[in-house]
Image (cartoon, rainbow, N blue to C red):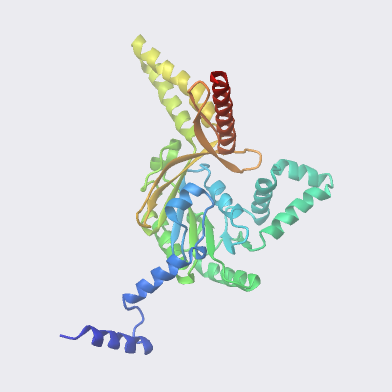
Length: 363
């Protein structure tokens, strides 16, 4: 039986000779993990704390899916990723949108000015509005956007040009969206091609992916298998995106049908009460919300993230975290995190003042 030292010597000799194309000693995996662990800056983060805490970034060669139904807010999440990484060299392949449109979205979100207002001010020869676009383009100078239809071969050429122009290798690549990749016939093959491309180039890969109608319509809660015709198998992480308002609208349609077909007065009353509750409470509450989650996470200990709600600023496209707090009557209310923290601070201060008054009265 060969001694371990002899095996190690043989492996070292073969490694020096480049004897194998695919085989690599297992100790190389230890080195790779150590390098990964000591250099968290090599990964790309979404900037959404709940997701980043669980995923701990997307590392070179890994694939993160951002999936949801049509108009569910997937691009808003991708835009948030861009906004939170102004100093990270990134490449965005977006056959679905033009470069000026992406820049306009970034400018609106960054400066809190609606795209409509930007357009109007530029038409009125407002130099300050022009300057906002230019400043945003300069601030995100490490972002390369390609809006042409593209295959993996075309991605190679565009990536090389971006790397040459930036003077450094991009850390992350976003593809919006998977179904628009030219070449492979089915979605599963497209996903496999994109995963292989990202691994070959050693970049963190983010791919936007549509859910199937059966799994993702009606604002349904995202599941690991909600993707259209696969894709989750290739992913290290899967981020689910949905709009709860569509779930409420779908439920209203069901209730209206039940009311129309019911003959029992008690049942009709129950259906109508539920309908009123959705129309008066849940639909107004979730009219402008976006809900994200992590439904797959290969990073040990494989933590998942249940629904986290964000408020969409419809004018600028920026999203802000919503938190549930208790008001002075003990009722749960949902507000922006900054507002909630301010409210709780005020409540805490009022309690301290009240406690001090009571102590003085006792004295």
